[in-house]
Length: 144
Image 1 (cartoon, rainbow, N blue to C red):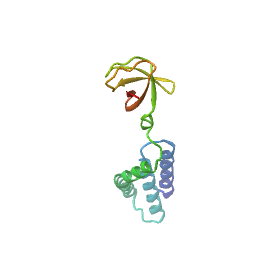
Image 2: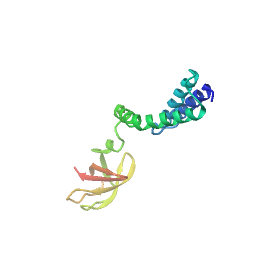
Image 3: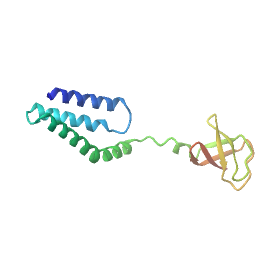
Image 4: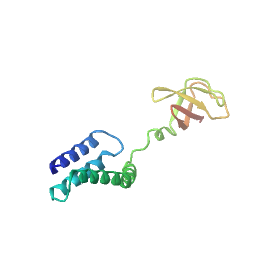
């Protein structure tokens, strides 16, 4: 196969990786295609079956060995806190009266949420409470 086909395929795969957010997978296939293209251009690529085998081996090997460290580094470099974590410690206003352990509605940032009373005391409507835990769309609150 011609070298430029491998290079073109590699560039397309890397462009698709950039265009589609996800788990950094196509990048490895794109780099492998570029490497095979360079080898073919230098005249050491061999027959087409060898090029395909080399492409597959390079892709899988780099995917298995490099993907984990790259994802960890990308996650570590992200300074953005998890959106659920930003709710912890926030105040809500109760829309319902809540007995200990009961569920009802509470308002947070203008939106109604399901809230569960973690306090040992009855919480009256209109009282401000603090979010201690978030599970899915349920807030676990305690009276202040």
